[in-house]
Amino acid sequence: LLYKPVYDFFVPGNGLLDKIWSIVAVSIAAQLVTLPLCLYYFHQFPNYFIITNIIVIPLSNLIIYTGILALALGNIPWISLVVAKALSLMVWFLNAFIHWMGSLPFSVTRGIAITLPESLVLYLILISGAVFISGKKKKWLFVSISLMILLSGSFLRERFGQASKCIFTVYDSRGTGLYDFTAGGKSILVGGLTALKDPFFQETMVKSRWNTKVSGLFEFQHPLPSYCNNSFHYDGFSKKGNYIGFRGKRIAIISKPVPEKVVRKLEVEYLIISGSPKLKLKELMKHFKPGLVILDSSNPPWKVKAWMMEAHGLGIRCYSVSVSGAFREEF
Image (cartoon, rainbow, N blue to C red; front, side, top):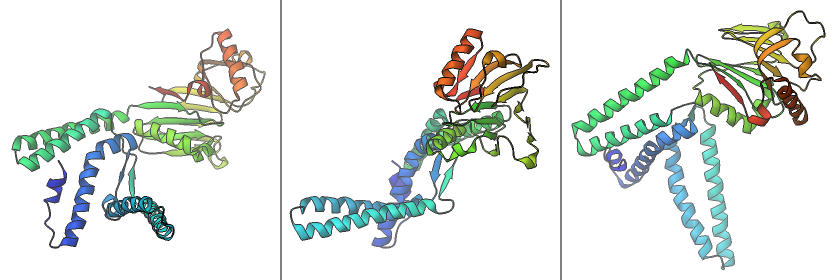
């Protein structure tokens, strides 16, 4: 459907140029067909796909034919060895070339987030546009333009919606506490940032950010570096010691036993227990009146189980990210 309209845009002057243009046309058509799925599932776009495919497509075909030849000549010792070596060399070069292209600056545009309805609308735009180019019927051009306006309106609505959206997340970050505060498309990350080196966690967190359409990231270790005087304030977010304020929500992070002296109970929306401190919830409740107790990933399973049982006995709402997965609250 898309190959012929793309191919007809240019008439090559010789046979070699025609072969190259045919590969380019196939690449563009294939990329357009897979574009909505690529953006929806992988949230990225390969910027150098045309240059890459000029090498990859013919080389892939050559590898397939060489592989078939290697199987056919498998019983002939010397010839099969030469063919196998050639096949191995071609596969190595293909992988090396793709890796090199991927390592070039600006090779991939990442962080593109679209919803399922938006991906379907994008498909309809491509189909109606292709039908218009093939048949020159103006009604399909009108349909395509109307869908583009609809898609643009959806993007604008999401963009303006970010300004009022606040999300608090406690990640299941495998042995460390990591907390994400998102507002207006910007995010502040607090906690054990070493978790970001974990490939599995990177994929989980990045997908979460794509789904919430976060456009920026500021990272601060917990506790904050000494030059910040262990406190930080930025656009509705404030942190002093183990206490955080975020868009009207109060959060306390407890990583060690609290002093016995009690002046008055501190009301907080979220009380995070981190770092496996030696304490009982009953004693902790003398100091805090939490809306929800959150046990992050830095606590061992046996302690989490004990705290969950104690919380149930005390009638306290308690959530464990290692048991139930990442905690996410939108307000």
